[in-house]
Amino acid sequence: MNTRTVSRPLRLLALSCFAVLAAACGEQAAPEATAPAATELTALQTPPPQYPLEAACSGHGGVSTLKVTVGTAGTPTEVVVAKGSGNAALDDAAVAAVKQWTFKPATRGGQPVAQTLNVPVNFPAPQVRPDACFSLDEKAKTPAQ
Image (cartoon, rainbow, N blue to C red; front, side):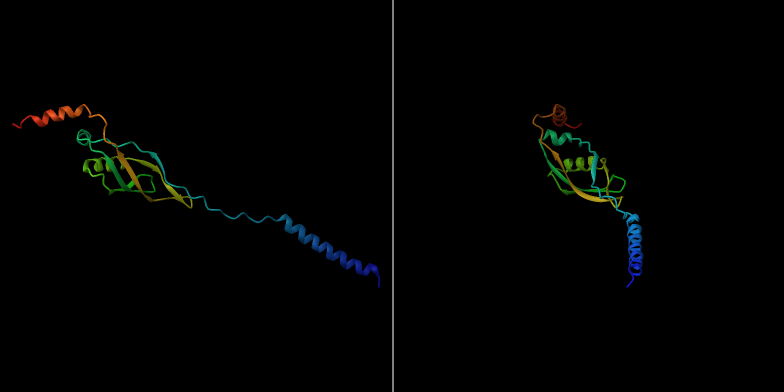
């Protein structure tokens, strides 16, 4: 058997394999499109509520737990009392304040989404009676004319 005839097909086979491997190594797979990471809702501006004077004068305190739905624009679209503080004036003040809050909305797939959460609003009972209470006391003592 002639060694030249055997080695030529082997050389061609080796060159073909080398060409295929070289071509495969040069190609890079297109990167898979990855979805943007999900982000959570973030509070931006959350000013505290005004403490109702009547509640402060009577020493009432408590926690109003609110169910808040934040829309895709980052503002509350629904605010309802989930669990009251035991004082309607405190609950009303909590709702009024939270309606003014602003958020960075949560995202899914790079798009903003609405999200609902429970927000506790704490009204600690005042340690010292506010000075404004004394004028309310005087008004209550004067008979109506």
